[in-house]
Length: 368
Image (cartoon, rainbow, N blue to C red; front, side, top):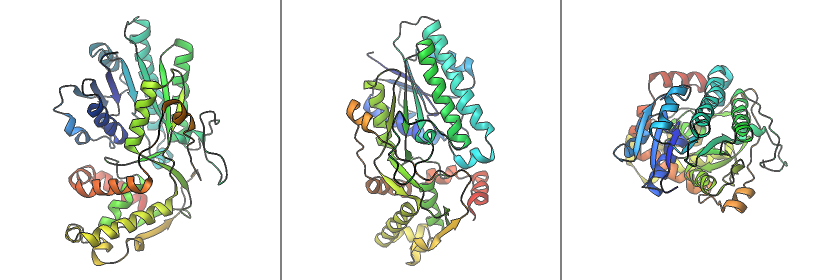
């Protein structure tokens, strides 16, 4: 392929938007079409710097609209789908699982059907690729001494969210083995970085410190996650798409296992340091304890654990490293410093996404 024309589903979401920026910068001659329903976690302003690029197009629509997807694949001569679109917040999946089945299962199937119709049934001469972005949560939970998740770890999802993602993984696999659709799948660990919606742990902690709100930690705070800086994830997807074997699954991890409590404590320390170095932050965020010389960690509050809360996730990225040359470039501390700096420099972005309905939901979930 001399030029790749990508359809990026969910491209106005956190990881999708970062991927769009990454791809347009690295492959300036490629064309990128974003399809996003702009639900609560999708934000078109996350793509504002791409809007003037002649190789970029935004389409407001839903992956469940198979006619729209079919038209885009044909009209834009799409040869690559990168499928990010998903409902992804575990808490929301517990209180309202239906949306997760609709988007993650039925929506993925709609994409697969459209891809099959255009690329296979239509006997298109275009080489094609359907890359499916999944999660380590499909593998279930690990004990303290268990080996990290590998690509052959049996699936054991424990929440409606992870079960819906597991179902979508199986559908993608089935469309390759049954129909010959050229697919790859990547299962990633917890992402963090710019443009992340503030219901997730890291941006939630940062914003609550800035506003002097409590820092909710589930249970004893000893739940462990492998954290992956979002740009490292984008690099990994790029490698899978360029060098990965069709039909294969690749785990993309950050080699950064941290307990939730340690993450919150680190963010508290880094923000205390930032306020001490920059007096303007105290003027911008007077409600923060850091502005009064107090410790941000004074805001830490332990709350009742959520149902089905997996104890530990960890990714074994040996296959991705050995086969594709994947190595994450950020440690957790370097990545978290970049993330905090981005959030302090992009106040307009996160204030715009924190509308009234979201604030109401956040306060209900975590307290004011």
